[in-house]
Length: 305
Length: 260
Image 1 (spheres, rainbow over the protein chains, first blue to last red):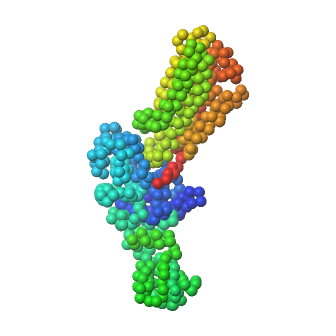
Image 2 (image 1 turned 60 degrees about the horizontal axis):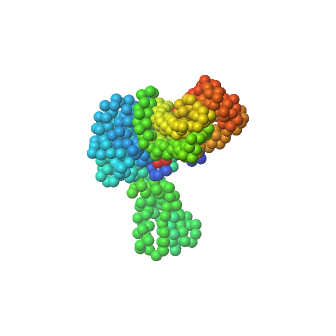
Image 3 (image 1 turned 45 degrees about the vertical axis):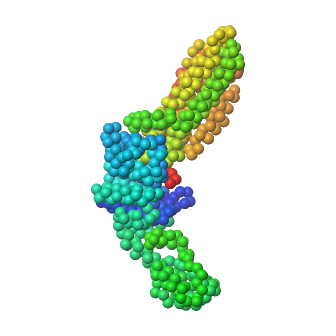
């Protein structure tokens, strides 16, 4: 079953690319959308939620065009990233209001609101204004409003951001339970291991493009083969270059000046370990070591970190 | 649509009444009341018609009505966008027009109550007992007419500003600019351009049907032939409906770009 299908999906904000040429099918179950900040995750989720329209390409969610689609919203729940709620309302009143707008009668909406808020461990605080809630409690209210009407698909934008460890554990447990009950989940995170604890299926976005799709293992393998550029500064750059060029993981070495070398490697982890060892035991005078491709570095760091 | 409009109206009527904006508007409606009280205090028995009509028209109808309508009307959709809560409403299976209508009705209720009370108290204060002569007595029916026209003005202006708030980023500033740079200015100038303002039709409703009042203020407050009450009512209703229709159309097609 295909829950979501995007074909050459693109979205620009003026000159800024939010998402570019994204073609992907997302199947049933739990899917993690990962990528560093600015990768295009939120743009993708806003397109899924129908808050914005694509600049080009198409997107179908549960077989429907999502923009302002009332039929879809009966089957769909959305937990936005922004920490915004009606602060003067209690969690119970808020969820009941949204449930009545989803078509439930007042009594049933009240019952569902109570049940859902109990599920997110807010039973004792549900009648207090949400303006007085902690960040974690507010996040749980946001999750609660996205699941209270019993949707088939729930989309959550960074649902674990800002949560304390206990709230994080509770929300993760809730999402696991939802996934196990047959609800399709798409959730975004810039921290891989958070998503990894919920699902093996991930989409990796980077700079508005789909970098990889598959299991976490597949994606790690894929990225580890991606050549990486590294800049080294050393007193004896030429001698260091002669030694480094013999490494298996190094694909090219250049010496732009007497005190620096530029290296391209297909296994950054292994290369880092060897350079660290080299710096400790040889007189090349290695002074610094940094990746020249900072953005990819960020992707790699969060993947392996 | 009616159900979701009602749900949003009933929820937001209470929230709007308790909001800081409503408190600010309440403070604003006290301004003409204080001016009326001051005039009453200073003028003593010589209060009556000229100050009641002048304060009622210039201070209440031309000034307070648009400001209150801007403050409460422009927030109808804009506040949901600024507070980034609109996501919860637009991802529900309701027509987007219900968001505008439900919230506008809630604001309109509060606006109507505030303006009706303000107009009533102002004329009551200036319609002093023991007025010296019939010349200075508040014309018969003027108080109830000012109350009705202030409420009508509040409704139409708030509909216009609610529509502006459904697609503009700073509807309060632009609304105030429109209220004073366009409405106030044009309706004060003695040209036919008055007819493109809502103020002209509100003034027509306030003065028309009372030839004696028109004659007394001809050349000062009334510088142009007024519209008939029927024409004025029709124009205001159409203007309000068009504004809401435009706002609803724009909102139903609008993309919502919110910061995280």
